[in-house]
Amino acid sequence: MTKLGPDAVRYLHAGNGTPVARPFHLRWLLPSFCGTNLTAWTVVWWSSWPIAATGMFVWRWRTGDTWQIALAATVLLLALPGILGPQVCRPVSVDLPATALTLVGCALFEPNQPARIAAALIVWWAAAAIRETQPVWAALWLWSPWPLLALLAPLIRAMLVKPGPDPLGDRFQQIADHPFRASLEHHSGRWRDGWLMVAPWGVCLIALWQPSWSLIVLLTVAYLQLLVATDTVRLIHHAAGPVMAAAAAGHIPTSLLLVACVAQVVWWRTPERV
Image (cartoon, rainbow, N blue to C red; front, top):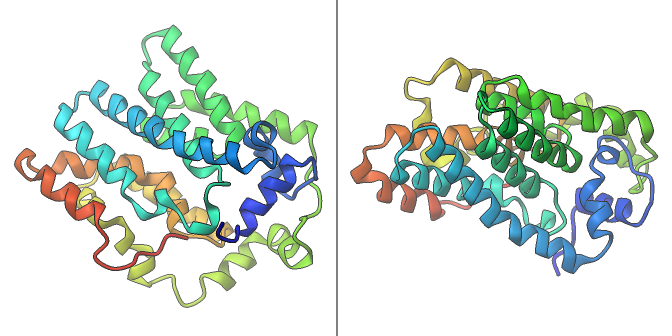
């Protein structure tokens, strides 16, 4: 098996009952469920792909997209390199499972039906227990405040469980204690690197043609998170990918959707994925 990255090692420590640094102490659901069992983590990771695909397709179809556009949006999203993520994050990762559940919540959500709101909130609470920022992204995807109620999950967790020292040692503890400084160091000289900041979007860049204000706000928030993070592509793709994919698919003529999907699925240049 490929050597696991720092985040994956932290989740395994958490699964073994070892205290972990912030924000990893908020992401308790999968470590509690999978523990240190790599087979369990693998099953969760692989299962997240069809769950994410179903959630994305149903959400877009329920918003009024044709099945062709909904299907193309799903392909454009799942083909993003950041959704796949780097090898060192697989299969011990929270990104894809959290995004998959968040998309299912969006598919369930109907602002005029209390039962659907309740069902979506339950799913978003679970997603927030996997990755604490998911309700924020759901709120921006739907342009609705309802998902923010699911922030109660990480809030309660933060009150009940305090972060521990980083199990990986002092160097990584410094990153946890000073995320802004760590971000500036890791992104030094790369803030205007198009191969890192723009190119990995691929066909989804079509979404920037006459973008909505909600998309602009979402992208702004997605990129602002990089100021307190050391990774890049996987963060912005899981944050803004669903809306970028949906907007891009909506701009592409139906007759060209298959071509667009093929162009997105294959890699014309080895992309950044971290």
